[in-house]
Image 1: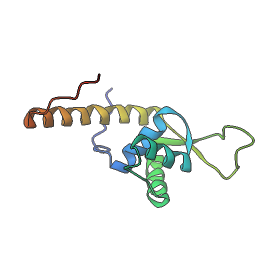
Image 2: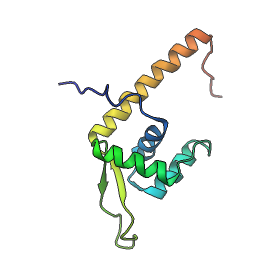
Image 3: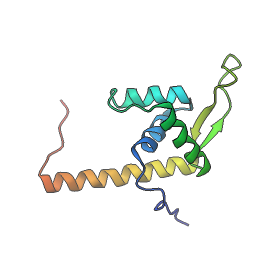
Image 4: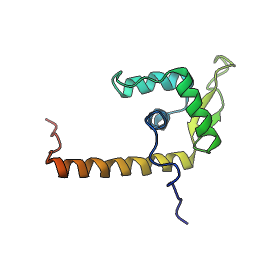
Length: 117
């Protein structure tokens, strides 16, 4: 049975960045904000309100889940988050959708991909 992601897509910029930040490893809220800033070279910054509003929605939708602290030395108030299997598949579907948008834009604008090296 194929999953229907239609009600989730397109992801908001904040949700997309949160999922990308969690794709590599489990992170706490501040760690997510730092990773989003790193991945976007500082061009996209999540404030705490935007982060936690989006995390709450993503938790309720089963896209992310809370997970255990990394070590006993971690602050017990710090909550860690990770992608669920559904969240990982949703992120993959959104990336594929965005690749199609970029392909169409390049075709219509006659823009060629930059070549490395």
